[in-house]
Length: 247
Ligand code: NAP
Image (cartoon, rainbow, N blue to C red; front, side, top):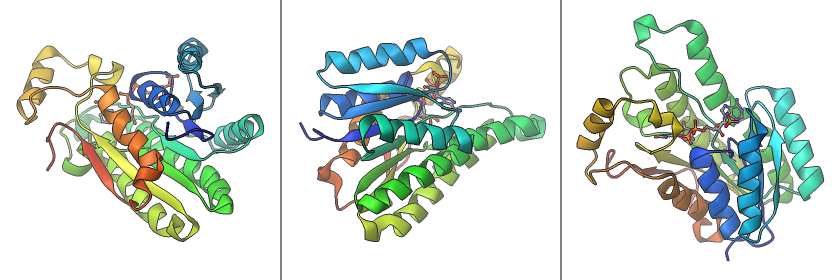
């Protein structure tokens, strides 16, 4: 096990890709704080799964787009678990629409959670890690942050922003032993993609060289690699987990 004695905080860890990341880190021995915003039932279920793997953790409610929530969340996690060694900025939303029809509030909501939430959480946890002179931050971007996507201007802009934020933080934090990287998933089977029609799903699959959607576990494996000592000489990088959609 590569993460024994380590403490991780995963935002949006209650379902989908976040849940798989929580379980993958726990399987390597990490204790995991599971952040959520909706009903606590799903987060509690994930914590039970963590315990079944022989590890431990906690659930923590916070809206990552609000700085007062983020401050309280980080305080609670450090108080309960003693420290934070690994931060996974995973929470994210979509509010799709064509630019000419997109409401200003839908643009703002996506930027606020996906990009500002990643900044706010990294700022508070980063301060803690810099003091300790060690830490790993992994931000979940998306391939559409690299290649754009019609109908997702707000989401693509937020995920492109996450890449810029990742590279800038990597440069600022490197001298203090904190690595910052991003994982850009392609087309992954979760609740977020459930709502797409079969027709859209089929059209996506045609542009994936490996010919199929990815799983949340595929993403979690890359995130876990970037959370262990195996990736100590890697910072400021973006790993695309997308079946070859982006090369
Ligand atoms: P998902 O199933 O919709 O899960 C989203 C998670 O984010 C949930 O745990 C949700 O909490 C949490 N969340 C949403 N808003 C939040 C907020 N304001 N504060 C705290 N938590 C919040 O999504 P997913 O597909 O697993 O996506 C996870 C990440 O991967 C996102 O950043 C997404 O953009 C990215 N991604 C996904 C795909 C894909 O194909 N699925 C592709 C590329 C990138 P509750 O359950 O409590 O609501």
